[in-house]
Image 1 (cartoon, rainbow, N blue to C red):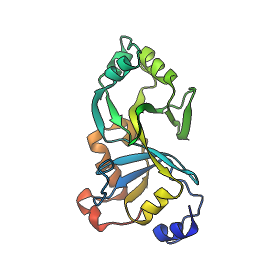
Image 2: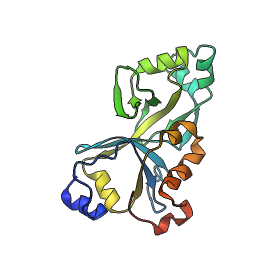
Image 3: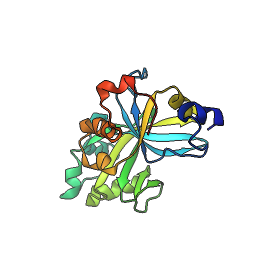
Length: 203
């Protein structure tokens, strides 16, 4: 993040090294990119090299059972079988053929990005095998694809008021149906989507 960009979107209050990991990005109504229109994105990583997030309110038509069948993992009876009805999400326009599991607790997997508060993003097959066998971890959101920003890109978009940001609440991620998550995140800011066109900045 350059100092000028930090100044543009936050009047110079935020230091250059501030990370938006474990924050929600709320797409402003003027968002032109159809991939992100009316989306709520959970930021998993944000540093000087760029940012990575998962769109958490856009379920696809695919159920987890179909994804598990595609990758040749059986769903055992019991809690694992119940996961089969959960949707697979459109996580973003990058690597849409690759699966990502946003989950809590963190656990120990081959390829996990630790976000915060026992929340992780895992891209290795071993977590899917555990889910198919035991149904754990219970708090999961599985996506195909992710949202990615190159160095400085997210800061520039924030300076253009493309997004609102707010610290994430895990209850929104794992305790609410997808169609309620965007409104719930906006309530954290005390704003309504109908009024977003008059709002700029972040919290």
